[in-house]
Length: 438
Figure 1 (cartoon, rainbow, N blue to C red):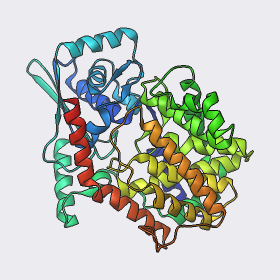
Figure 2 (tube, rainbow, N blue to C red; figure 1 turned 60 degrees about the horizontal axis):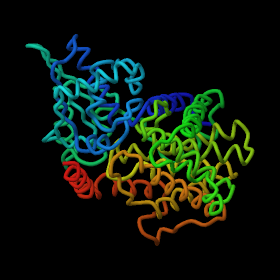
Figure 3 (spheres, rainbow, N blue to C red; figure 1 turned 180 degrees about the vertical axis):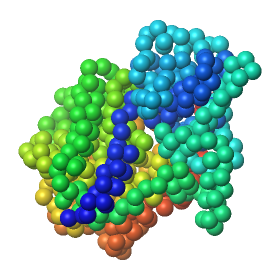
């Protein structure tokens, strides 16, 4: 049994990283920052200037904004100024009404918003909003985490401190995740031991992820969101291919929730490490498998904790935002959760992680958008294959690719590629996206 103090720190970490969110977290993060700047100004802004890191810009360009029927940053910024409340955190736009939406559209039409790339920073999660009214001005900055407000001087000092102490400059995952937040460092053994031995009453709260994210899948079926991938898998043609199987149900329920979220549905989901899609991907496959496999409530709770905490652990070295698609991380979480539900022990869970790393490494993130549901289905499909292989005692060996004998070293090899090795890819993706969009 892990000692009480360690359990408390892990639970605090999970509460910090697994939170409700409405809509894609990048544009919502910008709306949140706009809301805080407006609150500091104390009146409706006459002009808003928004400075963003490249990764925030990439993830906010092509995604639906909940309840608006619109895509992209301008409407998120306008609504953040007009009706946003920073106390709501990632549910900042939940007070949206048809009247405020029309007001937001009018605000955009008056050309009051400027959106620019922030120059001279390496922090991948950075939002700066400057609002003006008459001769008054106010600024708000979010950096290092989607709800982590900092002052400009604090950001400058911490950036310089990191550059000085790191010896390699402010780059990579550490620059992205550790400048402004202090994580309790995890490893795979600690993740497993905590999820499987912690008193059930201490971790029962993780079951809220099922309520949020499975509800999002159900609500998605009531409308036509994104590419309707979840609905498509439930239709007769798909059933003729996939059958009426656990596998098909897992893909459908996971894709449906993603369809709704990326398509702009006003549906809250429980996020993981700042991403709603990661929260969905770490939750729904585990819940569907547990239901159809008739696992107990305790087994489901422990599997969900194992899935979410695995994703949090991987993101500690990958960073909040990276060139690597987040579904890779969350799918590794769901794979180990499913292995646990299958009756697998720690060695089989490590095998599933290695099998995942041998397959999905290198999947690029080209922004948040409706087609994210396609990537999620790829991740979840691989999660099931990796779990099945692991339960058969099959594991990719250290003689193959980036997989190492140590599961933790394998994970760090994956995150090193995503955080540092794919940096040029990230720049190229953003260039392609912005040139296409004019």
